[in-house]
Image (cartoon, rainbow, N blue to C red):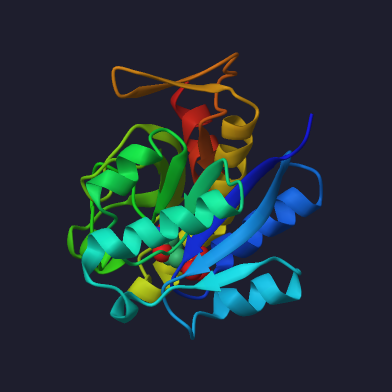
Length: 228
Ligand code: GRF
């Protein structure tokens, strides 16, 4: 069986792209990152693609007449490269409903909060303002509504008293880099089904869809023991 051909859409630094490249290159995830598409020429993720010898394409919104035409061009590039699955990794543009429908249940996103809480931008600022003791990230199938769709897995991190949005973001990114490869692994191994907009994972073992940041695990285990 050949490896699933996966495209990653980026706009920025591409640390999640890097995690996906590393996990597929090591053979841990049976897929090939075959294409990187960016809507920004300066995205550092393009450098990562180049270093890894992965084909990349830059499509600039200003070269197209509107969102429909832009997303149609992305769709055409994906098909040109025989892409089977698409991962959004810090892709900062809202996709048209038409594009999302074409890639139904073959299009993943990662968001730096425990969805459905804190959709949208400035997540870490808002988590701190709300006084949340935990935060995390979510990998989900994409639906036309922003940061909406069946949840594949979540990573959980503690919010610490001394946190700034930047420190919290860095901690959340650590779990993002473990969550996204795992979610892609489930997908390419054909273990995911969406039933009534809930994800079912074939042969699910307890905890497979939940990843804990080591700091959180360190806090929880002793106090759990005390209570028993
Ligand atoms: C991540 O926090 C991701 O959850 C969000 O955008 C950020 C992208 O970071 N969608 P990177 O480009 O992967 O480093």
